[in-house]
Amino acid sequence: MKPNSKPISRKKKGFVIVTGGLMLLFVIPVVGLAIDASFLFAVKARLQSATDAAALAAARSLSVGLTLAEQQGSAISRAQAFFAANYPPGLFNTNSRSLSVDVAETGFRTRTVTVTAAVDSPLFFMRILVNSPTTIVSATGRASRRDVNVILVMDRSGSMNSNGGCPAMRSAAKGFVNLFANQRDRLAMITFGISYALSYPANMNFKTSSPTLPAVIDTITCSGGTGIAQALYKGYEQIAQINEPGALNVILLFTDGVPNTVTADFPVNILDTSRVADNASLPQSPKNSRCYDWNNNQSWTRPNPYLGQQNPLWQPRNQFFRGAVYSQEGLSGGGNTLLGVVPYTSPGFTDPSGVIGYPYNSAASPATLYSTPAKTGDCWFQGGRGHNGNSQGTGTSHVQYDIAYFPDTDTYGTALRSADNFVPVNNFPGSNPYAGKIDVRDKTNMMNAAIAAADNVGKRIRNRDLAPNVNTVVYTIGLGETQANQETLLKRIANDAASPIYDQNKLEGLYVYAPTAADLNAAFVRIAAEILRFTH
Image 1 (cartoon, rainbow, N blue to C red):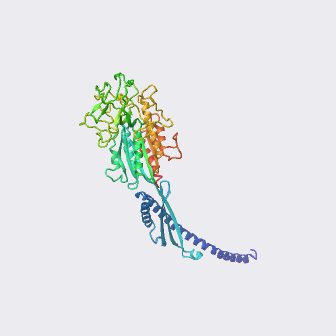
Image 2 (cartoon, rainbow, N blue to C red):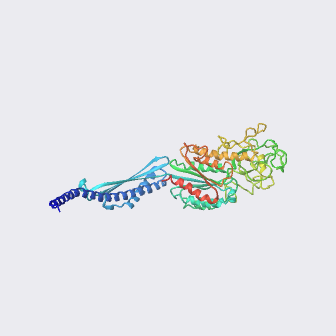
Image 3 (cartoon, rainbow, N blue to C red):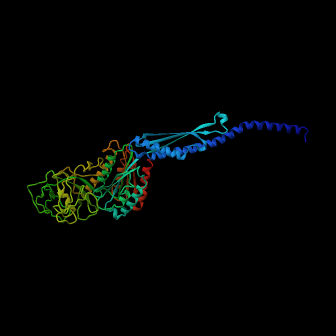
């Protein structure tokens, strides 16, 4: 061992003591800062959680009142209650708790609740450095709520029975409804076959009213044609009548087929046109309308093989029949025109299934009454809907002789032609007395008019025709599309991003395809998720 090793060791010990003392001057504040920071972090986390919960609860209460002022009072009360439950006075030994709630119209159809809270939190070690026993901890929570008005437009046509869609639709629609909040969201339902029915008027108590919307959905039966245009328009009318510009207004259209029905005021055919019969079994003689003057209890004909009557003293010039004409696919008969006439909706009459729009009156004269006049003096038709072998009609093909042509618009003012020629709608040729008018002799032409009408209703919704201040998002679900134009039509109506006429300046909807009835539940859930993600 070297002689100087011991003195060097004593020097090192002295250095350690000095260094350790100096380090304590830094370590103690750091440890104190860590302890205080951990405590403040816990206070901040709990305070943030409480403000977030208060903001979300307040946002969910916003659609209870219709005006911003009414909603603000409800939101403030709800926010205060939820904040107090999640951050009671004195928690973590904090004091001077304060809370402010602001409700503002922050965007399109959006009301935002901002909740700001602050507390004085105690300091332990750091009070020496900051010369204060407490420090202020604050947090801000925000949540938005869009008022939701949802109009279900549900297909109850006959084809829904053959593909299993009717029971699957009922189940999926009920699941969809249950995802929305009673007393906050407003729901309505329109169902359609050939005619439409307002099956459930708009109601915020759709889960507790009598009957409930799910209970009404359970009663849906499927039969008839596919009158999409009139049902979609009536759904839009519901949105316009609710008239809430600040709401998230939604129409959900479900169908398993393309439209085949047009509802309009059809001009009655009075010309001796001798139209070529599509069915070889029909008499090859002049075909005229079965127009019946209900007010004067007399029928008109220029010798007509179907009525066998003649009344030259009354001719139904400038007369109209208000009803629905549909192209019934899949029928045989050797021709293209397979049309039927059914009435437009008539208050006070219901068919055996309870659907408004199929009036029948056994005490009337004639005994079978299926049509509704547009106005005083207009035509009603004897012999029912012109099919099923009744004594005064010979089948669906006769309808082309009852009416002269399709008008330019349907009953609701919707054009029966596509502006961009999405589907061609042809006119009578120049040699025909009705040249320039929509030809009623061809089934495909009639279906194209029905498709064009539905497409144009979608356009009217996007253009806010009925309510300039109310925007509406349209979602569509198609079940098992096999027909031409069906998928494209539903994309166009929804303004889906994949639509060939997608307009980025209009509200973007969504089209969902359900290959089979088993896929309907997932399709409805997909739409519900899309709607609900915009609510808060």
